[in-house]
Length: 389
Image 1 (spheres, helix red, strand yellow):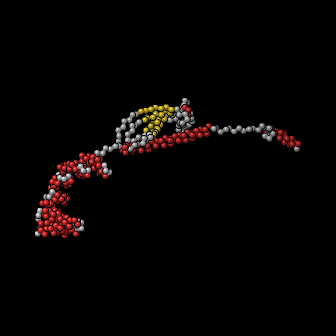
Image 2 (spheres, one colour):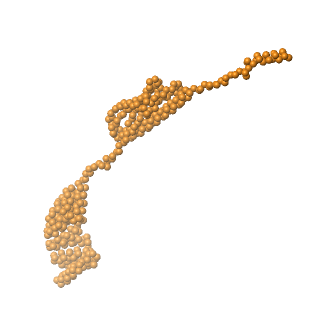
């Protein structure tokens, strides 16, 4: 037993150096390797570049759409108007600007493996503006500007896009307010002589109504100067002279009208009245005799002629005139009395008595009767003629 125990102890001692429990090992600290940050930075940069490129392309698309719409409106306006020849002067202006704070670098490349950032302070854009000033014709056309943007990277950076992009910008010029000159145009209106004469006649009648006879006479004369056939102006002028007692000028005015227009018998009728007022009975009868029978002035002619004939004791002419008046107005007692007086003056007593009786017979007719003095005269004369028989 002791041998066995001794062997077991020896075996235990052999196995102790290999036991992990008896080994005093210092605690080991594990240091995990840190994940690389570069891929995330590249991803963020690519996203930033992609979003910038999308925004820039969207802006270009919007500007192009606005340019096309403006060109369409301009073309339609020009087609609506009549084409006009406009002399234009082509001028090209090259402008270089360093946009340090306004322009963003444009880097857009799908599948790019290299990240490059272009500093804003090193971007130079060359803007070429082509202007075609158009002289003002029918409308003010908008100015079209073509802008070519070229991006130049800084030293050591690769150029991503070598082809410059052209942007066509349409800038509308302010339209000056149009003035309608038609409302300010002075149009010369030419009046005919007849129209001028009518205006002078109206001015003359207005002056006559206001008691300005001298001005009225002048206006009537001017009217006749423009239109001698304006008979109403000549008649009113003669009436003004007659009213002023200037019978000579009234007679001259009427004689002038009668000589210029022989068929205007009103001049002869008025001339006979002026001559009768001036005491020229024979001249008045001559003027009345120039008026033929069958006109609208017959009644006036025979009435004045019978009155003047009695004054000058031309009873034969008076008898003829009264008989003509009775043919038109057979119930007029005044005409019967005038005929009876003319016959009585010619000693034609029998016919005179009959004419006196007719005058008494129609004296009761309204507005055609005789005055009391006329009735007394007829009755007395009938008694005398009866006694003489």
